[in-house]
Length: 157
Picture (cartoon, rainbow, N blue to C red):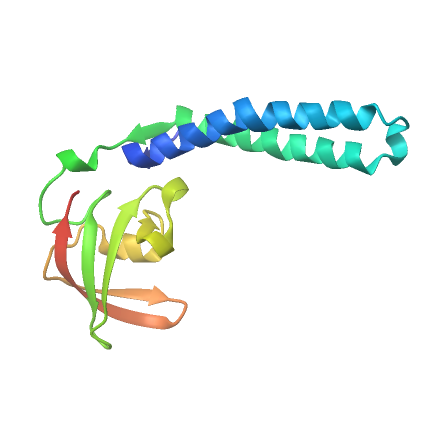
């Protein structure tokens, strides 16, 4: 069983989603199914079929969350240090072509959110950064082509 690295914040978010799906969504869907059943003939009851589909999707997501949480390897980033990029690092990069600065935190797959500055440890960018030091240059193949970046700062917060 392969462990899944994640931050305490990411783990807490998954636990919150699981709790919401089990304690709020599940009872709501069960009530919707009961309501739809009371309308009679189930073979032509669109509300019933829609509620059953919602139930299947919700139960599937619950199973997925339970699996991910059971395999979680929670890494407390605040206890890490150094100038080498590893899981949990917040890395400041400068695009060597455009001089544009970007800041990324390397997190687990389940907590990645590019708009919030969190990239998955399995992303091409993170894979290129892992093991590099502050001051290093890295080349990353992106959808827009190969890009070169200079690592200006590595920190753990």
